[in-house]
Image 1: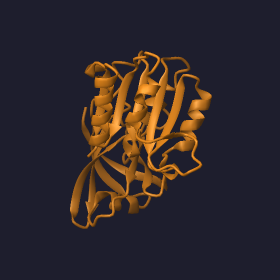
Image 2: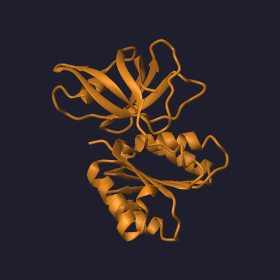
Image 3: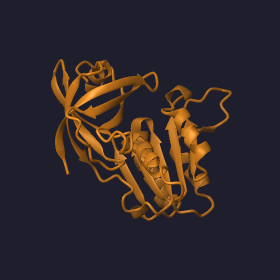
Image 4: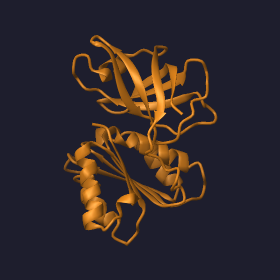
Length: 239
């Protein structure tokens, strides 16, 4: 159920040269009820006035901190842009949000294997879903294919690698579109690697989040080259 909340910034910290992690809590200490994969609308004061922007929740619901959640914001250098204002916020500042919104979740498919495909901050709802599911010691296989430009752009790199090392059912792959010469991992765009990742005839549910062009390409490859039913491909675009 969508509600309006006043939230307070707990802390902000860089995740990459252009992306900041922002941790929020409810201004009245109330529990924030949401499902991993959903998003909130933020009313952001800027020099040009209040701008409303939607941000995916990057963290799973937390029983120990039920009044808190995280988002990741890419800095876009345009005057009056909401991302600039959010990057400059100091701890303790308050904003108004409404939500949660969205149906890009795993609620109806928690028993099924999943391939998560994301680029940039499109990894945010995917991280929330993975974090939520890995609280259970057993469950279906999960794999994240994360597309970034450079190694510096791999958000939550250490955490995701730690999760993969600690949980045999979770695999983490990164592909770089602008890799250095000595990079030994995957290269190119995420859609180029789908056939190899699914070569053994596996049919996990696909969850893809990012810019429209990438999402459309992943959906096309999955359906036209791999014979996927569209109902097994779940997507969310943020442009």
